[in-house]
Image 1 (cartoon, rainbow, N blue to C red):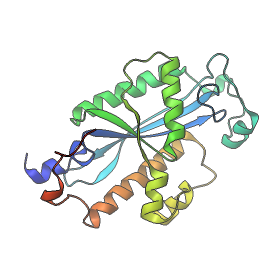
Image 2: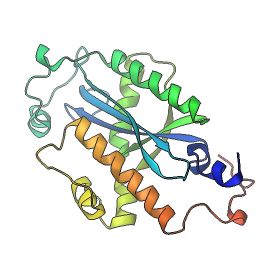
Image 3: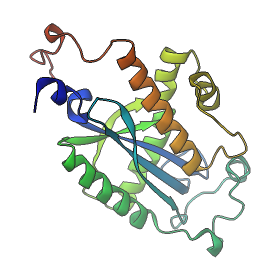
Length: 222
């Protein structure tokens, strides 16, 4: 593989990390006590010219774990009227995360990356719920970095001067329907588009690949 082609890979672009876009819908703000109700994950891929784009989408409605706290205000916000309704087709946290992690590990390995990293809008929120659910399910093969994330709210503030997802998408030229918002599937797909737009915009502006003198990792201590 030529040096140019090597630079146009996920493992080179993100220092061995495999970015996965995540969004969750929940029954509150406390990841340890409040129910996780919906999760979507979108994996990403890079074409031979180094342009980032969405790859695989995985989406699950999730049944509240035993003893979970459910706040009515949260349900009013995300539009999930009855978390226990069989019509939701909800699965357990364990089932959803096992399937998502299985696909992530498969694509991560194919990309030659060493670890997955979560991409999310206000990422600390989504990351905390995924980590808490993984702990409850006693999943030992969690592919995500335990604390590092790519936060599209921060990145959008830099790239577009907007931190709200809908406004950032509008500024980036990405269609956003507020009536569809607060669905994990819809929000994840828009966040994936937004993250790809930011990364690709940086490339268009000449920010990637770096100059040869800037690619020395000898001072990296992480």
